[in-house]
Length: 276
Image 1 (cartoon, rainbow, N blue to C red):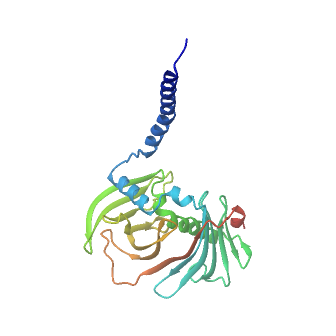
Image 2 (cartoon, rainbow, N blue to C red):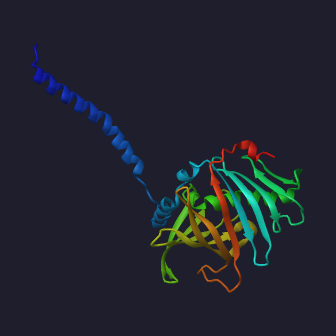
Protein backbone atom coordinates (compact mmCIF):
# COMPACT_ATOMS: atom_id res chain seq x y z
CA UNK A 1 0.00 0.00 0.00
CA UNK A 2 1.34 3.39 -1.01
CA UNK A 3 0.66 6.75 0.66
CA UNK A 4 1.16 10.16 -0.87
CA UNK A 5 3.33 12.69 0.92
CA UNK A 6 0.22 14.73 1.73
CA UNK A 7 -1.49 11.70 3.31
CA UNK A 8 1.58 10.98 5.45
CA UNK A 9 1.71 14.56 6.70
CA UNK A 10 -2.01 14.54 7.61
CA UNK A 11 -1.71 11.15 9.34
CA UNK A 12 1.34 12.26 11.31
CA UNK A 13 -0.44 15.44 12.43
CA UNK A 14 -3.46 13.47 13.65
CA UNK A 15 -1.29 10.97 15.53
CA UNK A 16 0.68 13.78 17.18
CA UNK A 17 -2.50 15.57 18.24
CA UNK A 18 -4.01 12.40 19.74
CA UNK A 19 -0.78 11.52 21.49
CA UNK A 20 -0.40 15.05 22.86
CA UNK A 21 -4.01 15.05 24.08
CA UNK A 22 -3.54 11.76 25.91
CA UNK A 23 -0.51 13.18 27.70
CA UNK A 24 -2.09 16.46 28.78
CA UNK A 25 -5.56 15.35 29.85
CA UNK A 26 -4.47 13.36 32.95
CA UNK A 27 -2.40 16.34 34.10
CA UNK A 28 -5.37 18.65 33.69
CA UNK A 29 -7.57 16.22 35.65
CA UNK A 30 -4.93 15.93 38.38
CA UNK A 31 -4.60 19.68 38.63
CA UNK A 32 -8.37 20.03 38.94
CA UNK A 33 -8.48 17.44 41.75
CA UNK A 34 -5.82 19.33 43.69
CA UNK A 35 -7.82 22.56 43.67
CA UNK A 36 -11.02 21.04 45.06
CA UNK A 37 -11.51 22.03 48.71
CA UNK A 38 -14.32 20.59 50.81
CA UNK A 39 -15.45 22.62 53.83
CA UNK A 40 -17.21 21.34 56.95
CA UNK A 41 -19.13 24.60 57.33
CA UNK A 42 -18.85 28.37 56.86
CA UNK A 43 -16.45 28.70 59.78
CA UNK A 44 -14.06 26.20 58.20
CA UNK A 45 -14.23 28.06 54.88
CA UNK A 46 -13.39 31.39 56.54
CA UNK A 47 -10.40 29.89 58.34
CA UNK A 48 -9.19 28.39 55.06
CA UNK A 49 -9.44 31.76 53.30
CA UNK A 50 -7.55 33.38 56.17
CA UNK A 51 -4.78 30.77 55.89
CA UNK A 52 -4.39 31.53 52.20
CA UNK A 53 -3.97 35.19 53.09
CA UNK A 54 -1.31 34.71 55.79
CA UNK A 55 0.30 31.64 54.19
CA UNK A 56 -0.73 28.03 54.84
CA UNK A 57 1.40 25.40 56.59
CA UNK A 58 2.88 24.22 53.31
CA UNK A 59 4.09 27.76 52.60
CA UNK A 60 5.47 28.08 56.11
CA UNK A 61 7.21 24.69 56.19
CA UNK A 62 8.99 25.39 52.90
CA UNK A 63 11.15 27.70 55.02
CA UNK A 64 12.20 24.61 57.03
CA UNK A 65 13.12 26.49 60.23
CA UNK A 66 13.10 29.87 61.97
CA UNK A 67 15.14 31.84 64.52
CA UNK A 68 13.72 34.95 66.17
CA UNK A 69 13.71 37.03 69.36
CA UNK A 70 10.73 36.57 71.66
CA UNK A 71 9.94 39.36 74.13
CA UNK A 72 7.18 39.02 76.72
CA UNK A 73 6.63 42.08 78.94
CA UNK A 74 4.06 42.45 81.74
CA UNK A 75 2.63 45.79 82.96
CA UNK A 76 4.83 45.70 86.10
CA UNK A 77 7.92 45.86 83.86
CA UNK A 78 9.00 42.22 84.20
CA UNK A 79 10.07 40.51 81.00
CA UNK A 80 11.20 37.29 79.39
CA UNK A 81 13.54 37.70 76.42
CA UNK A 82 14.57 34.56 74.57
CA UNK A 83 16.11 33.48 71.29
CA UNK A 84 13.68 30.97 69.83
CA UNK A 85 14.55 28.27 67.30
CA UNK A 86 12.07 25.91 65.62
CA UNK A 87 12.22 23.21 62.97
CA UNK A 88 8.74 22.96 61.44
CA UNK A 89 8.99 19.28 60.47
CA UNK A 90 8.60 17.50 63.80
CA UNK A 91 7.83 20.73 65.69
CA UNK A 92 11.23 20.88 67.37
CA UNK A 93 11.60 23.84 69.72
CA UNK A 94 14.43 25.58 71.57
CA UNK A 95 14.64 28.74 73.69
CA UNK A 96 17.69 30.50 75.13
CA UNK A 97 16.59 32.97 77.82
CA UNK A 98 18.94 35.86 78.48
CA UNK A 99 16.26 37.43 80.65
CA UNK A 100 13.63 35.40 82.53
CA UNK A 101 11.95 37.48 85.19
CA UNK A 102 8.74 35.47 84.71
CA UNK A 103 10.10 32.03 83.82
CA UNK A 104 12.18 30.62 86.70
CA UNK A 105 13.11 34.06 88.11
CA UNK A 106 14.92 32.34 91.00
CA UNK A 107 17.60 31.08 88.59
CA UNK A 108 20.37 33.58 87.86
CA UNK A 109 22.07 33.53 84.48
CA UNK A 110 21.06 31.95 81.19
CA UNK A 111 18.53 29.16 80.96
CA UNK A 112 17.86 26.92 77.96
CA UNK A 113 14.73 24.95 77.19
CA UNK A 114 14.40 22.38 74.44
CA UNK A 115 12.25 19.76 72.78
CA UNK A 116 14.10 17.43 70.39
CA UNK A 117 11.08 15.53 69.11
CA UNK A 118 10.96 13.07 71.99
CA UNK A 119 12.25 14.74 75.17
CA UNK A 120 11.82 18.04 76.99
CA UNK A 121 14.90 19.34 78.77
CA UNK A 122 16.17 22.31 80.79
CA UNK A 123 19.63 23.74 81.39
CA UNK A 124 20.82 26.46 83.76
CA UNK A 125 24.19 28.01 82.93
CA UNK A 126 25.00 24.93 80.86
CA UNK A 127 24.06 22.42 83.56
CA UNK A 128 21.14 20.05 83.00
CA UNK A 129 18.30 20.30 85.53
CA UNK A 130 16.10 17.26 86.19
CA UNK A 131 13.57 19.01 88.45
CA UNK A 132 10.18 17.44 87.59
CA UNK A 133 8.21 20.58 88.45
CA UNK A 134 10.40 22.78 86.24
CA UNK A 135 10.26 20.27 83.38
CA UNK A 136 6.45 20.42 83.47
CA UNK A 137 6.76 24.15 82.84
CA UNK A 138 9.13 23.46 79.95
CA UNK A 139 6.62 20.94 78.56
CA UNK A 140 4.09 23.78 78.51
CA UNK A 141 6.38 26.56 77.21
CA UNK A 142 7.99 24.76 74.28
CA UNK A 143 4.85 23.58 72.41
CA UNK A 144 2.98 26.77 73.39
CA UNK A 145 5.60 29.09 71.90
CA UNK A 146 5.78 26.94 68.78
CA UNK A 147 2.00 26.87 68.48
CA UNK A 148 1.63 30.64 68.79
CA UNK A 149 4.09 31.10 65.93
CA UNK A 150 2.32 28.59 63.68
CA UNK A 151 -1.23 28.95 65.01
CA UNK A 152 -2.99 30.28 61.92
CA UNK A 153 -1.45 27.54 59.78
CA UNK A 154 -2.27 24.78 62.29
CA UNK A 155 -5.93 25.77 62.52
CA UNK A 156 -6.42 23.54 59.48
CA UNK A 157 -5.00 20.48 61.28
CA UNK A 158 -7.20 17.38 61.73
CA UNK A 159 -9.17 17.40 64.97
CA UNK A 160 -10.10 21.09 64.77
CA UNK A 161 -13.78 22.02 65.01
CA UNK A 162 -15.27 25.18 63.51
CA UNK A 163 -18.44 27.03 64.45
CA UNK A 164 -19.58 30.19 62.71
CA UNK A 165 -20.88 32.53 65.43
CA UNK A 166 -22.01 35.36 63.16
CA UNK A 167 -21.13 38.93 62.24
CA UNK A 168 -20.06 41.62 64.67
CA UNK A 169 -19.00 45.26 64.28
CA UNK A 170 -16.27 46.62 66.55
CA UNK A 171 -14.88 50.14 66.19
CA UNK A 172 -16.70 50.48 62.85
CA UNK A 173 -14.98 47.35 61.48
CA UNK A 174 -17.11 44.40 60.37
CA UNK A 175 -15.99 40.94 61.46
CA UNK A 176 -16.92 37.32 60.93
CA UNK A 177 -16.62 35.51 64.26
CA UNK A 178 -15.54 31.85 64.29
CA UNK A 179 -15.29 29.63 67.36
CA UNK A 180 -12.52 27.02 67.40
CA UNK A 181 -12.48 23.90 69.58
CA UNK A 182 -10.29 20.81 69.53
CA UNK A 183 -10.89 17.06 69.69
CA UNK A 184 -8.99 15.24 72.42
CA UNK A 185 -8.67 11.68 73.68
CA UNK A 186 -7.93 12.99 77.18
CA UNK A 187 -10.58 13.82 79.75
CA UNK A 188 -9.18 17.24 80.63
CA UNK A 189 -10.65 20.31 78.87
CA UNK A 190 -9.02 21.76 75.78
CA UNK A 191 -8.57 25.39 74.76
CA UNK A 192 -11.24 27.45 73.05
CA UNK A 193 -10.55 30.24 70.55
CA UNK A 194 -12.94 32.82 69.18
CA UNK A 195 -11.49 34.56 66.13
CA UNK A 196 -12.54 37.93 64.73
CA UNK A 197 -11.81 37.87 61.00
CA UNK A 198 -11.76 41.26 59.31
CA UNK A 199 -14.22 41.11 56.40
CA UNK A 200 -12.06 43.41 54.27
CA UNK A 201 -8.57 41.97 54.89
CA UNK A 202 -9.53 38.36 55.83
CA UNK A 203 -6.97 38.65 58.66
CA UNK A 204 -7.61 37.92 62.32
CA UNK A 205 -7.42 41.33 63.99
CA UNK A 206 -8.07 39.87 67.43
CA UNK A 207 -9.16 36.67 69.13
CA UNK A 208 -10.32 35.38 72.49
CA UNK A 209 -8.57 32.37 74.02
CA UNK A 210 -8.51 30.20 77.12
CA UNK A 211 -5.56 28.54 78.85
CA UNK A 212 -6.92 25.14 79.81
CA UNK A 213 -3.63 23.92 81.29
CA UNK A 214 -3.90 26.61 83.98
CA UNK A 215 -7.67 26.38 84.45
CA UNK A 216 -8.42 29.67 82.68
CA UNK A 217 -11.70 28.74 80.97
CA UNK A 218 -14.54 30.96 82.22
CA UNK A 219 -12.73 34.27 81.74
CA UNK A 220 -10.82 34.36 78.45
CA UNK A 221 -8.02 36.64 77.31
CA UNK A 222 -8.35 38.98 74.34
CA UNK A 223 -5.34 39.14 72.00
CA UNK A 224 -4.93 42.02 69.50
CA UNK A 225 -2.55 41.56 66.56
CA UNK A 226 -0.40 43.61 64.18
CA UNK A 227 1.16 41.92 61.16
CA UNK A 228 4.43 42.14 59.27
CA UNK A 229 5.11 40.60 55.86
CA UNK A 230 8.18 38.34 55.94
CA UNK A 231 9.11 35.88 53.17
CA UNK A 232 5.63 36.15 51.62
CA UNK A 233 4.03 35.28 54.96
CA UNK A 234 1.90 37.57 57.10
CA UNK A 235 3.34 37.17 60.61
CA UNK A 236 1.53 38.66 63.66
CA UNK A 237 4.73 40.07 65.16
CA UNK A 238 3.12 42.46 67.68
CA UNK A 239 0.58 41.29 70.22
CA UNK A 240 -1.31 42.87 73.10
CA UNK A 241 -3.50 40.86 75.44
CA UNK A 242 -5.38 40.99 78.73
CA UNK A 243 -8.43 39.47 80.40
CA UNK A 244 -11.75 39.91 78.65
CA UNK A 245 -15.29 38.59 78.43
CA UNK A 246 -16.72 36.32 75.73
CA UNK A 247 -18.19 39.48 74.19
CA UNK A 248 -14.66 40.88 73.73
CA UNK A 249 -15.16 43.52 76.43
CA UNK A 250 -11.97 44.55 78.21
CA UNK A 251 -11.23 46.66 81.26
CA UNK A 252 -8.95 49.68 81.54
CA UNK A 253 -6.17 47.46 82.90
CA UNK A 254 -2.81 47.72 81.08
CA UNK A 255 -1.92 45.25 78.32
CA UNK A 256 0.66 42.49 78.34
CA UNK A 257 3.01 43.05 75.38
CA UNK A 258 4.51 40.33 73.20
CA UNK A 259 6.79 40.96 70.22
CA UNK A 260 8.60 38.74 67.74
CA UNK A 261 11.62 40.43 66.16
CA UNK A 262 14.70 39.58 64.07
CA UNK A 263 12.79 36.79 62.32
CA UNK A 264 15.04 34.74 60.00
CA UNK A 265 13.94 31.61 58.11
CA UNK A 266 16.07 28.85 56.53
CA UNK A 267 18.97 28.71 58.98
CA UNK A 268 20.00 25.10 58.19
CA UNK A 269 19.14 23.97 61.71
CA UNK A 270 19.25 20.24 62.43
CA UNK A 271 18.23 17.97 65.29
CA UNK A 272 21.61 18.42 67.00
CA UNK A 273 20.68 22.02 67.70
CA UNK A 274 17.79 20.78 69.86
CA UNK A 275 19.56 18.08 71.86
CA UNK A 276 20.59 18.74 75.45
